[in-house]
Structures are given as structure tokens and as C-alpha cells.
Image (cartoon, rainbow, N blue to C red; front, side, top):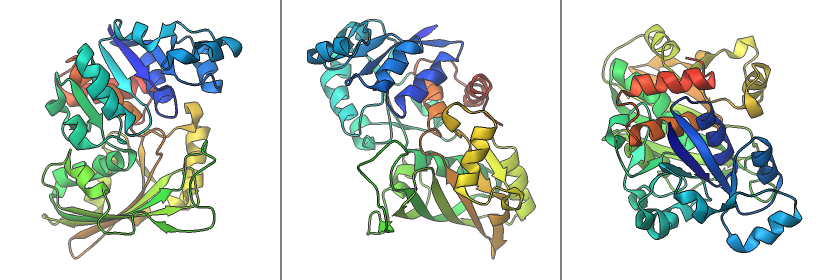
Length: 339
């Protein structure tokens, strides 16, 4: 049973902690918080040992009546690996200033730059490249979503070229200080956006060009893809492939799944913790092939789709499982993921 720590018990960190806690080959030995907020209190109530990442704030936690198990320095010696879920940019600093010096393996999230971490990870495209690695970056929620559907399509028909338009949520549901309120914002206004190069860090050599917008919603991202294929296939071939692809759901608008709001309602109705949807939702009706170019639309729950990838990354880096398919299957089973 390998020991895992979570540095930053926020939107992603708390989800990764719960995902690790339900596995049978790894365990959470501690999570960290900087601020004595409701998430810190919930961590303790869930039974996680809580360590503070800013030792000078110990008094604040005592005043808030939140029990701590020590500072983050007390946590390091207990770990086989740490998952760094701190705000973007801090992880790379932690890597250089702490983890490398202490010899601690670490996983980082998509907000970190690939060049500063040195290796990026996706369960389906390059799992084997992270076997035994010391430092790995799990790619962003958008990149994860793109890889989840492009990889099986590439396996089936070969991808010649991808063009994708990302319609991105303006802020996460819990955020109150960011995101457009009455606007559609090109983000960035230049083309291509950074999403294509990010995909290329895990799908090597893929010809992909992306652009992105921010819109006034909080619940999901939405992708519009145009994929030129090398091999002639039928729409039914694509449907069959995606229906048999793990962590992908084909949903039908005509059956009440015609919007991201309805997709999120579905996640709540099936009883997912926090209403999370770990799978990528593809609208079945959107799948169409014209002159050997595949068109489709999909939805990404940005708060949760990378969570199972973090579990798989732990398994690869600690060499608990060398076969990506077996790790994916185990993670899915323990997290009740469909497919």
C-alpha cells in the first residue's frame, strides 16, 4: 500500500484525495491547506490528516477549531509520492525548491508548464512513458477531453488533421471573482490557442490546431471538433468505437441530454459525489462524416475529468501497474466510472 499526499486540498485536490482513498493499492496519509476554510474542516471530518502549508498560520487553524496533524514538513517523510494541486505556477516552484531537494516523486496538474515539469501524462496515450518517473504533469481538463476521444478515433481510422474550437466555462462554480458576466471572450484572441500544443505533449506528432472562447457559464467546457481521417469509415464505426471506449459516454440530445446543464443533471441523478462527471460526454447526434472529415461535439466537466488520470499516474510512477489498460480498469471499478 503506497502512501500519497495531496498538497492543496481545493477543487482538484479534494477530488484526487477521494479517488485515491477508494483504491486498494494506495492510501492518503495527509492533505494540506493554507487557509482554515470549510474545505479544511471537511478534510478533517472525512478522516484525512490535515497539515498546514504555511506554518505561520497555525494560530488561525486553532482559532477556527480545526485540528491539524502538523506542518507540510512533517508530511514529506511519510510519502511515496505527492500530488501537487496548488494554484498554477506554484507547483513548478515546489518542484525546484522542495521536491527535488527532498527526493520526493510528484505529480502536477495542467496549470503547470510542460517544459518546467519535463513530462506530461495521459492514461490512454502515453502511460508507459511515465513508468517509474519522478515528475509528471497530468494534462489539463481540456487536453484530457481531447485525448479521450481522439485516441480511439486515431486507433480506428488514423487522424490526419484536427481542428477544434473550445467553448470554455468562464469560471468554476465556486469562483466569484473571475469569468465574463455578459460577454463572449476570445481566450486567447490569437490562433492557435495553447490547447493544441498541450495535446502534442501526450499525443506525439498529432497535427492539431485549436482556438478557444470563454462564455458566461460555470458548469462545463464544450468542444467542437473537425477531424480529417486517413481511413474511410462510417459514422456507425465511430459510434461503436466510442461506445466501447473507457471514460467516454455517448449521450443523445433527443433523450433529454441537449445541453451541458442536462448533462450535469444526469451526473447528479446517477449519484455522483459532488455531481462529478469523470467521463467525456459526446453528443451522438453530432457525429457526422463529410468527405472523410469527422465532425462531433463533446462536453468536459472541468472539475473532475482529470481525477482518474491522477490515480493512473500514481500507479505508473510507483510502478504498481505497467499495463495502462489494467490500471484504467482498476481505477474505473473503484471509482464507479462507466466504461
